[in-house]
Length: 267
Ligand code: DGL
Image (cartoon, rainbow, N blue to C red; front, side, top):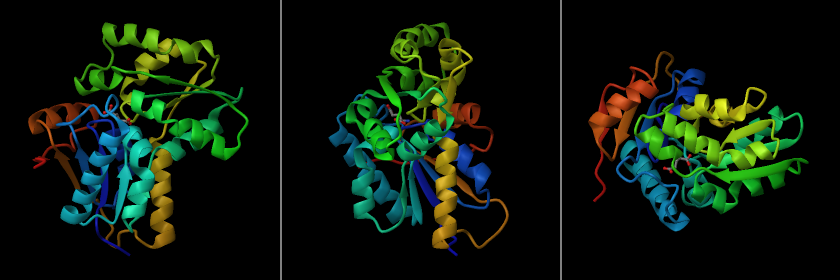
């Protein structure tokens, strides 16, 4: 048994979709969530730069918050750095790419699966590799959606403009006849209504959030790292950007639990 908190991070608000699933599944666990809103978006940056950010944040969560596990709740950071973080730390490090792939493969019926993500994630080939490693016989269509993250970070989740952008960016996956669309960026579930409208009702939208939470639960059970104390866990929210904005948009996207947001400044 281990009463230390679970650490989780994203470039900003996207990882809150994973935090929600995790808190619902393991409510007794303490959580420290870090949103790197001072440096978002990660998607257009080079993978080398994102890898350094991910290393820096993981080290901060381990050294300052003494976390027992880190969930990389950002596809771009997971695509850039997951293996390296696992090599550098001796605590479990959980990503979102493999859980998302598992969920998408379980959902597809016509074996045509779409994946959308940031330019960094799609360009990294992480999804193409993850699907190949399962040996599943599926036709995969990947498409980058630059601009989606910025709409979410501005709190604009179903405006006319985001709809117009979605029509354009989702055309390749729509034309490919996919019956399952994996939201390969943790921000995208906040755009689910717009994405769903554009793709049509018959296409299932899959997020990696729930499957990632199940992976955390499995690890807690297998390793005995679960919290001894029952009851509701404590949740801390930390942001490298404007904390007032994190609190107000976070409360809107996530819920009123986001009350106190701690500021973090990179030296
Ligand atoms: N939520 C991050 C992801 O899953 C968004 C990255 C960004 O900041 O562009 O990829």
